[in-house]
Amino acid sequence: MSTNRTLILARRVVQQMMADRRTLALIVVVPVILLSFLGILIRAEPGKLVVGIVNDDQGVTLVGRAVNLGDRLAEVLGGFEEFEAEVMTASEADRRLQDGSADAVIMVGPDFTTQVTQTRHLALRVTFEGSNPMISDRLRTIFERVALQAANNFVLVASSPTASDLPELTATIDARYIHSGPEYDTLDYMAPALIGFLVFFFVFLLTCVSFLRERLAGTLERLQATPIRAHEIILGYMGGFLLFGLIQGAITLLFTVFVLDIHYAGNLLNIFVVEVLLVAVSVNLGIFLSTFAQNEFQVLQFVPLVVVSQGLLGGVIWQIEDMPRWLQPLSKLMPLTYANQALRDVMIKGESLLDVAGPLGAILLFAALVIMLSSRTAGRATI
Amino acid sequence: MTGYAVEVNEVHKRFGTVHALEGLTLKAHRGEIYGLLGPNGAGKSTLIRTIVGLLAPDSGSVTVLGHAMPDKNILARVGYMTQASALYDELTVFQNVAFFAGLMGCRDRDAIDAAIAFVDLAQRRDSRVATLSGGMRQRVSLASVMAHQPDVILLDEPTVGVDPQLRVQFWAHFRAMTERGITLIVSSHVMDEAERCDRLGFVRSGQLIAEGTAAALREQAGCDTVEEAFLVFAEQRGVSNNEH
Image (cartoon, rainbow over the protein chains, first blue to last red):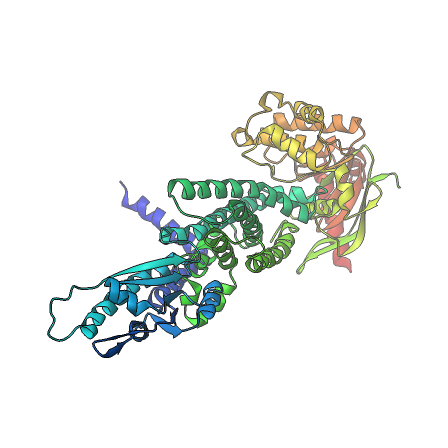
């Protein structure tokens, strides 16, 4: 072993790195940016959830006192910081569950107190909006506590101070779900986004490297000396990579559905429509960004910038509504945000393509923009 | 329609402050091998890329087979071999040749096989290009610019890095092509290849400083070799440049 030779090689490595200023900058800047995002996202206060109470409880008179368990419940619910409790009418509750502006509604019937008195059992009827199983779970746990608390409270109120032999009340949650169901878990929420994310990530990387190689090898220049037009090059690339994007999409989908056993409500074919649009965006973004890379190593530098940032801010793990307000516009500038929305709506809510026309339109808009940029790239052999 | 395969008229091309082509004029007859001779950086590659239409001239005109360039449609009748063999390493010889021929509108498998046989690579037809030697790659490159039977082929330093034996083979190929009526424009900085061209153009500082057959140019300069003749013409140009 020669220290001298080792040092010479180490020096060369340092010299090479120093020559690539962009890589140097990225080594320093990217971790800081990503850590800031992570820090903000993890520490962000989750957005306020909305819980509706439809209280029709008539109450009963026990030992000379009017007892209304529905009112008590509303009072208890008002004391939580995790959500905002709103008293609403049945029709209003219905509407707000449908449009997603209420996360859960507790229905208290006219004979609620009567039933509890007679059966000594408190069954809390809750309808969950359900599109985010994580939220439903969080609320469900709280409601179980609330029901128990209300039941025990009732025992204190309804019993005479001397009677100590009263049995404790039991409490259960009688849950209904607008979307998904109690069997849905975090994976069901993440899977649609991950399917989109993986396709976007791999197709972007493949196109970016392929197009870079096309330019470095000089084959792009040769292509341009043939009758092929820039838009034909782009369409050809899209067609080729679409095949692999869809194969990958199909495999991830089948794997998550049949092996990981995730639940889905919608038409699986709709997922492919979203994926086709997503592939169009990632192919063209790959072609366009390949202009800014001199080698494969520099393509890898796009991963934290283009892919990881969208993974963090595009709503894959953290809900966009839970992000700080100033960060949310950044999410709106990312195609994955809309793909995630569309894929979740299709898979969890079972919506049709028409229902997700909004996010699909947004992805189309991104596609049009990057196609414009990439066709300029494909028309030039050199940077 | 003129009798020339390629006409370049008073073409200027500037990259920033660098004047790559300075009013260059050149005419190549059909079926001839026209050699572009000049040192590195003289403007040969820029000239060829302008003829193919990859670069638009700042002023002046380029005509290929009677069509003003750049014209994407006429490119189907043109072949362009770049300096380095630009091929897809993962694909086989056949796949590479078929790809470029296909873009030119030729989907005839026999024509593709014939082109591969023409450069003596029939044995390696289904080998991946990555496994071939440098000389073989150059031959694949040549096959891929001629399979669609173009009327004009532009070759940018096709014999760079090619061993002497293969170089002789290449020139035999070129000559055979002209017998099919194909026009070749070949750039080189190797002066001994000049003798194999029908006509020569000396390129220096973006200008054509002399044109003619090798013999005529030698005679005109009063030299024994093309190399010496080039230096004589270059010298004259240098002197005349200094005069004004």
